[in-house]
Structure formats: structure tokens, C-alpha cells
Image (cartoon, rainbow, N blue to C red; front, top):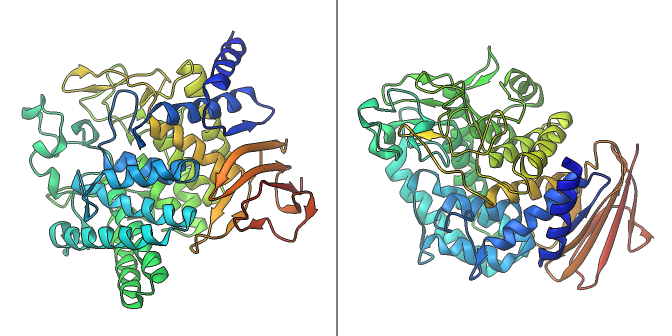
Length: 466
């Protein structure tokens, strides 16, 4: 029955996929989920702007940025650029919810690396640098060396324990309407600021602004030290969620925060492995915030608490790949495909319960609607294939592509078609698993799996050692 359903969805998507990218492996579910992800991105692109999902518009800076960072800048750079500028204030500063909007900087730097567009880079740097200066003045807590504000993407109050959650305001879902929520210091938000400083430093380097580059490097190093000092428990190998307005550290596990911290290389390989081993996971992956708050339960899970948000699964898998936890990477890759194709019956839902049931979760004592075709879930799945299984990496010149593929878990062949990088149409074939053994570009042996844009169709074949 399951195989029949996957085949039916796959046939439908092969007709609907107008973007042309396709994946071919020996696993029908993985291939179908890839086609579904491409279709979802196409379906949610309106007037050249990528919306957050079928039930949402494109107005969130975090959604726009994460989608471009995941896959949109590569698959459709024109839509990516339009989407990124759509969440700014006339291109002068980054707009919308203040606490995590600086994530736009990561996407802007990545967009340049993919496109090589220096005019975009200059304009994006001015916008991001101006925004960072304003946020430093408004949101930086010098006592802790950390930035204030809620957690990345968690604008619903069910993401927070008491006393941040005020039970007297149980009917108000927006986090900032609860007292003191603007005076907390969260792991995910501060790691995003850290990554934004790094991105600004890279942009400044490319634009030959050495003083600004040094400033960003100094700020980045100082913020990394503050995160480790206040939110990392080295003896117990844990990264903590937040420090509240009273200075109390809440020892919850924030799925996105941990994933971003591990992916950012805040810890060395041994430390990261110990933190990874200590994480509390579910059958369907890392939960958003765990454990459950006392006001919630398994039968009434909080919308942001002990729920599976697949875009977090994607960040977690990305981090696992970066620190060498390959088994966990492949597990999350397969989880995301199963959630969409089996549990979601051909749909990248926004949220699932830890039992794998599509749901909107409980908030304000009501069960919220489940949302279909969520873009960042789809682009997160695409990112795992593009960045890791096939290993596409763009250098900071915007003119060179290197491939460092992981390949399939079982070493079987996988093929990616229809990727257009700048003016070059790519086909990428990877066989085996392990260290690189043999490279061919358009049938000819090559020393390195590295190319520049040529304007000609290019096939890259990489044989790995196993």
C-alpha cells in the first residue's frame, strides 16, 4: 500500500515539476520526496517571491532567508533575490520581527557565493551592516555579552517555559505580549548573530573593507566566548536554551539552537560528539523544545514544545554532516522523506507530533490548524541533497564550485539533474561512499571535482572509495 501511494505521488509530481531538477537513486521514497520538495517550492512562488507555505504569505524574514539559504539561491536565483529584498525596508535595513531578522545576512552572503553578483553584494552589505549596528545599540546585553530577544522563529508563546510564559495571558499567542520576553537570551538567536558577524566579515573582505572585516571577526570571537560561557555546560555536555530576565538558565534542549551551534563549529569535534550523544531525540527526529513543559502533555503537545518541525530536522542533519555524524545525517534525511511521503501522504506539513502525525499543536488552549506545503521543510530537504549527499560548495569568489559529496549510505549510485549554476547546466553523478577516488568531467579524468561557469552543459562523475 505504501509503495503504491509513493508511486502514485511520484507520477503526479513528474508531471507537475516545471523547474526541471530531479533526483535518481535506488530509493523511490527519497526520489519522490525530492520531486515533492521541488514542486512545493514552485507551488509557493508567486510573482517571483517565495512564500512561507500554502497557508502563509512571504512576509517573514526568517522564512525568506532560510529558504534562500537552503536551496532557492541555487535553484532560482531571480526569485531568491526578489524574495530577500521583499523583506527589507526599501533595501536600507532588514525588516520585520527584530530578534532574528539578522539571519538575512547569512542568506545574502550565500546568495553572492552562488551567483557571483557583486552589485547585489555591495547593496546587501550596506543593508545588513546598518541593521547590525542598530541591533547592537538596541538589543545587546553587555553584562552577559549576549543579544536579547526570543528564539529564532519561535514567535509563539508555547516555545517558552514559565516565567516567560505568563499563565494570566494564556489567550495571547504572541511571545512579546508576555512580560519580560524581550529580556531573555536564547541560544539560537545568539548563534545566528555569531554567524551573521562571520558573514559580514566575509562580505567586507570581498569588498576590500579590512577595518570592517577585523571588527566583525572581533565581534564574532567575543560572542562565541559569551555563548560558551553562559549557555554551554561542558561537564554535562549540554547546550542550554535560554537565560531569562531574572538571570536563571533554563536547562531545556532547543532543537534549532543546538543544531546551529554544532553546525557553526562552536565546539571541537570531540565536544560536539559528546553533546550529540547526550541529545534527547524522538523516532521522528529532534523535537523543537524538550522536554515537555508542565502545562503540556503528549496528548496536548505545545505548538513549539515537543513537536517535530521538519525544517529543524534539516538544520540538525546539516550539523550532523558537518561534524561527521553520518549515521544521524542519513537517519534525518530518511525521516524527512518519510514524514512527507508516508505520514504526510505527499505533503511537507509544517509540524508533526512526536508520533509523526501532522498537527498544528496546542496554543492558547486550542489545537491550531495544520499547515500544508511548508516551504522551508521542502527546501531543507533539498539542502541535504545539494550540500551533503552531492556536496556542492561555493567559494567566496562567487566563481568556483567544488564538490565534496558524501554519497548514499549504501554506496549506490545517485544522480542529480537540472541544476543550473549561473550559466552552466549541471548533471552530477556520485557512486560509492567514502573518500574520493576518481573524478570525470564531461567524460575526461580530472584532478579535482571543481569547476567554473562555462556556459556549457557539464556532467561531473565522482567515484568514491567504497
